[in-house]
Length: 104
Image (cartoon, rainbow, N blue to C red; front, side, top):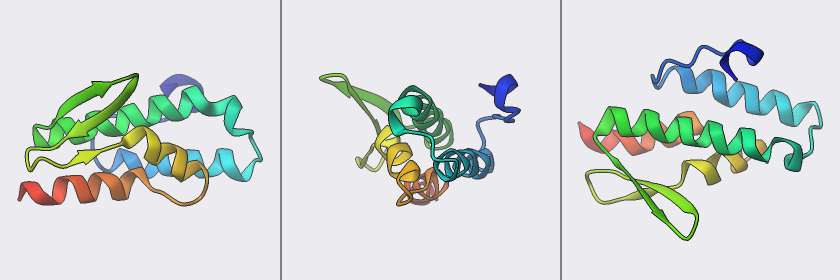
């Protein structure tokens, strides 16, 4: 993904601006969601890992679904947020901002 899309993914919150922009570009190009479902899942997982590294959160999984549980006990679904972003109603950057705001 990094080489093909020339994305610089360095596990920082700032890199999620680029991820959101890439998802937005895919949507504007008219790419069918089914064609990018695995990419969206991967980008959501990447956003989740950014949150984990910034907050000390942990991954939770059940029934094939995966969430992030931040130290304040809240559950976050970055894969669903990536799908919402593709639909034009979400942002991985804002999800990260909200999930990490409780760590201060």
